[in-house]
Length: 367
Image (tube, rainbow, N blue to C red; front, side, top):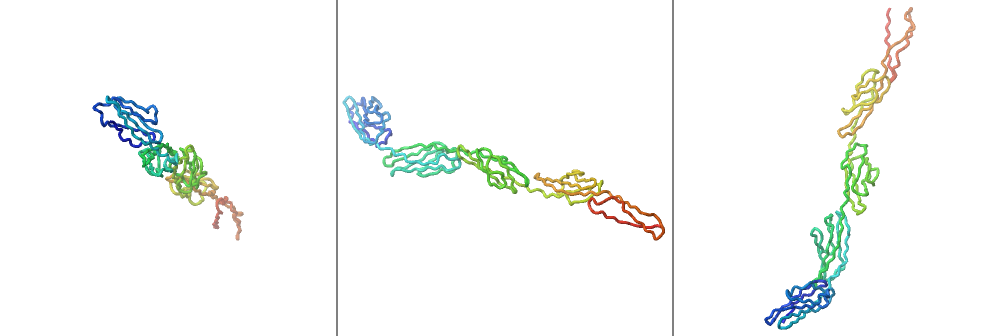
């Protein structure tokens, strides 16, 4: 007497492993065993004959929902014993509708949403880096390229214990390596600097204040105050964006003075002083150190000064140079009887180069 051990319900395409027990072998071991699986997935395995290792069956499965007979025939020298067991095959859970925002860029959230689950069905997600979740709507925040890969969804029918699964290949793009060159800039008030962005396909600059344009890889910045500029670079192939920034320091110009406008005498040295100290003079008839000696006329001289930030400004001073005075006069008579009228004529050189000349007469008589 033989009896097939109870076969639990199976699911479509699930391998079964039936066994049997000998209740009465009439004192003789089995010689051979024939298993019959009518309607199984592989017709070639409908009948299996074993002469040893009687429970070592090949993979037996069913691809159609239904009720099936499993038959075992055991032979020994006493004859044949037969038993039949009923096998119920249940359907696999249907693959539900899955929405996923694939592909995504690094730093974004990767979200899955499952709809259409059966009443008795539960799910479980498995993904890269050991990620799991049993939520029907779930997001992975701030993904990186290591989150790229295969995600597997398992669906379990809690009534039949049948399990199904599906795979989703998710792409996580790396961000473009956006960088601004140079990464720090110092300029002086009124100066400009060129900023260049690299690492992406297109660029958007902001804020626009002080920029000659707001698109393109290269812009000219002329801010009036220290300004933090940003650029958003876009990879046109993936649509992913990255951002970089640069701080443009604007240093104020030094307050420069070349001194008050002044006058000088032709051929006479005049020392000029500018402030702050440490600058230099340029212009006609002057040394870098400010020693001036020029002919009669007017010269405009410039004092240049650069501070520790190499910011330079300048100021001018006007030097009016007068001729050296040459005094002289003529008289119409040198002697005579008194009372004597003498007419004097000024023959001194002209001294109105810079300002009106001041002539002073001193008259004395002898005799």
